[in-house]
Image 1 (cartoon, rainbow, N blue to C red):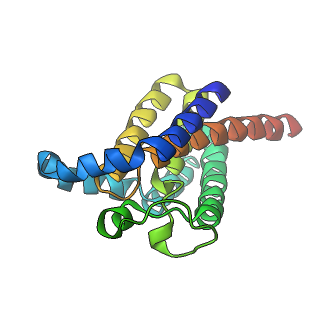
Image 2 (cartoon, rainbow, N blue to C red):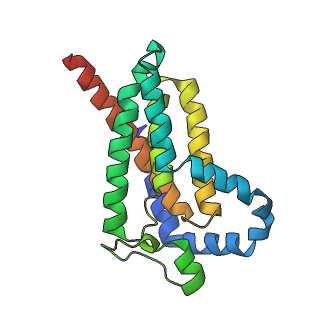
Length: 196
């Protein structure tokens, strides 16, 4: 899994420096082709938002009081929320990458380090990083459930690209980071359980 995470980050960086502007411009020119799916893309993006994921996770954690089978996911869910959100806030501020909207409307592209404005928070994709870290963590514990969650987080990432909130490179880097966070989360869980 470490190799997958690193490979995704490298592919994302290649896309950021070589392809993102062209891909985004191409999608923008052909946006009418997927206009019929715009409502669906917005729904997927909304469900993948941190607040919604947090509420769903909190609900599952509460349910684990009554359903023992859910208890094995409580630690990783909690840790994914904390680590992912911390990484998202820190890295968005550090990199200050201009969002696609700035590129499409004003020709502004690239990194503007240590900016806290929303227009300069393209990397990482918070939606993608959070959902993929949970998905990969679950995959390491339950392949079947994790597979479906990886598919879901892929849809979330695609929605962010097609809604022009992030570039392809942002999403690939975020998937890679999600994968690496998942590995860390599962290792921390093992350390925690061995200390009991």
